[in-house]
Image (cartoon, rainbow, N blue to C red):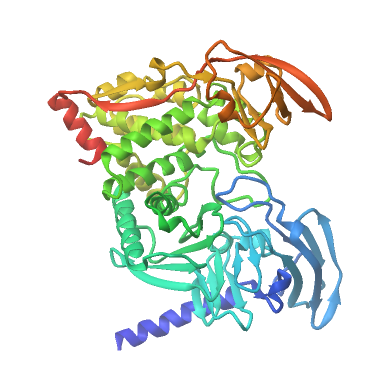
Length: 589
């Protein structure tokens, strides 16, 4: 009897949510090869006192920090009420205004959305499948953003499956508690494989699109192991269900995190090699860890969202970069990656950042703030003027972890910062953290002020003391290139055309430009940079004949010793007990 009453109560609550939703969307795809989704948005205006109501399209989607102007894909917008056409006027780049008259109850707005960009940030439709990011598919009413939103999908007759993390009502009908949840719930439509499994008794699902050669049993086991280890960082799981949407295509485009799901796009052949397979697991680990870092533990600017404007924060180095760091840590802790392999990759990762000229120009905080204008819009000078908040953030996450472990004699680590932020700001206060609160969390966990570190390395561009840091853990820190004579020209070339020039390098000093077509070097036909430099020595002079703007020009370049680093992390011969203790905490030995 109790179960029956609970079931009735649940149906009553669900029915109330549906009836209370003032905005309802219907998505159809009657002609998928056209790449058009057909959308009908129904508005309940019976309680509106205003003379008009505005519908908007988002300009960006959370997790991808670029204004993408999704309204550009919207066509043939029309409105009706009681079967009669209504005037609907576009009053800004992403806003449509409908006049309301007394007695009007429901307004139906119809529009087409062109979807032919298959990435994790956009929407896509063809005769094989459909993929929807609701932020770039559905119009919304800003003042209704905190209320329930209803969605129904009518798949094309050849598509049999719909996968999404939204709460299912019946069939392909769904309900979101608010606009943020609706926009944070991607949808895969088609005939993809669906694999169900549990992580600590929490239902998980993989919607697997595309043809691959993958051992599904091993893959699911490895994903389960990864997800269990990810949960161990904070110690509790925020979801009662979770969905991985995986697109297996010719060339993968990365991943995007969501509140109860993720979409990951990978190369279909990646599963066939050990390195490619580990890359897939690493990508899934990154997106999965976002369940905590950014979706719950977040900078205060990242939610509730303003979908029309940039949402600025100094802390993408933390939200994205340290998530990249934890993807590697999680795989280290599951033993999918050995500690030796981890240390080799660590040296390469730090070398990559320190070999980027922009790392000495732009701080991690500045890179985060300027993500909106720089990260997704790189040009030929980006490497010289900026640094990736992913790469630098990952590096800083590792250094901060070692700093905490050393300061607390192994009692604490970076995990404890996440536990503190999760408990204090997500669970207790239901909000994000400020810049000062993030810094204070590191100070609290380490038992000493993090102000100096943040000033020098987060807001500043000072290079960390790698030698001193690694020495405390019983490792040497060396540059393998120091003992070698390595010729350096300071440029990159693709198909005989210069694609990048390194600031202050030989090509930069010589006056060569990105875009120059190399015709000859030292009066010999140019056959590629690797072949050119194979027998060159430091101090050699090279005369480049290039075509620039259709005219031939010559430039003299002097080969120098490479400034690029090749860092290596190696254990000392006889580490002390103290070093071994810190190392055990750091590498989960």
